[in-house]
Image (cartoon, rainbow, N blue to C red; front, side, top):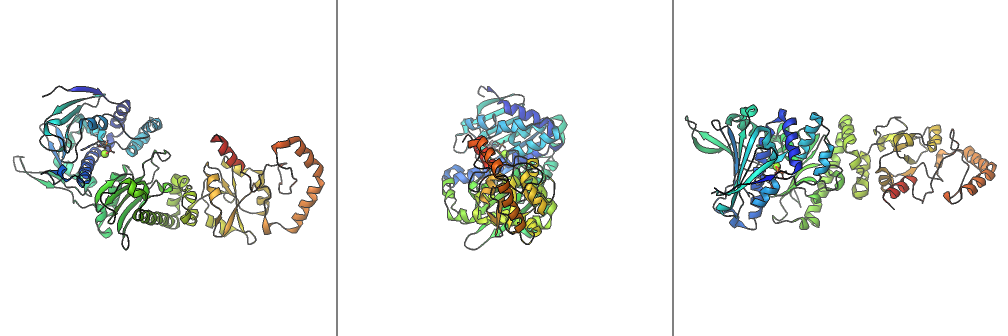
Length: 558
Ligand code: ADP
Ligand code: MG
């Protein structure tokens, strides 16, 4: 054997290991889901690479994952004949955390174990979860296309460092050998392992095999223990809710059930299957610009790529799941996806699907919808600007705080607003401010309160941006109540108009004095009858930037 080299783990890995072992002890069995899913990914990657280089498969073309346990040695072994790893890949993949936003993730940890374990679940514990059950782990791997004597062995006790050495390995792929800790010995049991595999990995298209043994415990043959059919290719009526939920947890790295899902086979000019999930909770990196979109792309059941951003608009980036196309070429690249008729059709079809799924939820289960809105509403608000074609549909999904509810929670839909509109009202009135309180207490609302006209109270950072793209809903124009020459239309009676004229005349001198004193700081000073209890308020002209937008621009350094 050759000399081993010792390397230190990246700091974040040490932190992750420590956290994982301390917060996931009640959820130990997920280590197998993670390791089997890595083995299955390795098979997918090899299959994909072999499309352009069939020699890679060699005489070992039947891809599999094998799981076994050895009671005497106290070990569990997970093997695959997938793509394997080169020495460099082992160094990066099993020594660092290469994900974007890792620092951001660590800054979110609170020290509260329940909260942190959920976050870790969403972050994806991946390979390192081996240390939840093992006190030492050995990985033996040989990359596809690499000679038998250039294989690599990685070994670690999960305590800050790992050893690497060159080894000889006859078969392509990766063996992961877990030396199981005393408090996890229950897992060194093939019957138990089999149960976990059926629970988490039944849907994998790759066969997951376990030993058939004779009476002496000797292996007689390897037998597949999963059904081996990709879940989404099965008939909807044959798939139980539990199967859908477990599948979601595997692909989304979530510990919790999804809020809802939609499984569709589309036929006609385009043929594809989509399986789309809406999570219950926001991922920890929902606001990270580099956030990975959650849609996996398959072509004819072959895995092509994670994070296929072209398949889902950015304002639906919380959707998880996959699409499997029958029409795209197997050698499709991100560049091809970018500008492609087939991708566009899949994207527009699944966007409609998600929007109608949400509409249905809003109609059938308003409480669940409210929970969805509280979690993802702010993201959905990017929709009207991003997706003009579906603007009306998205607008119908928006929820607002309003003077009708007197409550900061956004619960009012535009349809509910319109239904309450008095007959003479033809506009949807709203105000955007820095906070709910600032919106609620703005003097500009006084006249509306007096007349019993509802006003939507917006106070999120994105709201000004939203309202600059949302001009009307169901043929009713949106109107900010802080605009100077606010036209109340038929809501204004003749007496009020006359009163306004009289006021302006009566206060002409004062207005001029204010105007002179304020100079360039204002455009004009006017008397108004609209205020009932406040002495003055600031408004903007229709064509000017709103005060809120001006603040945004200022914050952006404009
Ligand atoms: P993820 O699967 O989300 O990428 P993991 O921590 O599970 O994160 O795995 C890290 C990386 O290690 C994988 O992306 C892959 O490149 C590599 N890896 C892990 N297990 C295997 C395996 N059995 N065969 C080949 N590569 C693997
Ligand atoms: Mg993984």
